[in-house]
Amino acid sequence: MAAADIIIRPLLSEKSYNGIADKRYTFVVAKTANKTQIKDAIESMFDGVKVAKVNTANYLGKFKRMGRNEGMTASYKKAVVILKEDSKSIALFDSLS
Image (cartoon, rainbow, N blue to C red; front, side, top):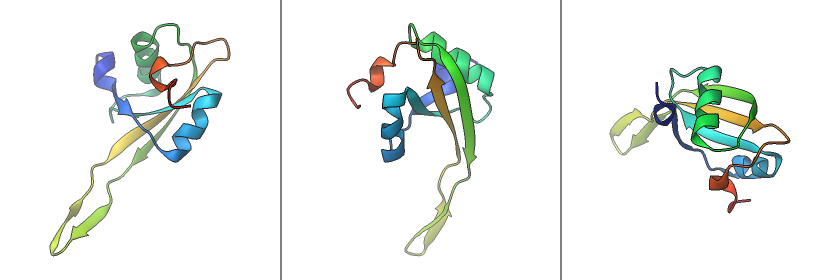
């Protein structure tokens, strides 16, 4: 899998904003990607970034209703990437902290 296929998008929430100062970044990733693939994808997509640790979590879709219509929201996999102390920060998130 290519790096662009593994990292789908950044996940921006109140909790993920708090981690930016500590070099903790949150991404939605491909459900089939493992931690090693996620680490390699982050290091190849962003220059000068060294990953120390990757934590992952799978989220199942929730049951939702709108009137008489019912369905499920999409399932996804979340990855929290922790960078090393001597690593550069990810430029995409610099304006958010």
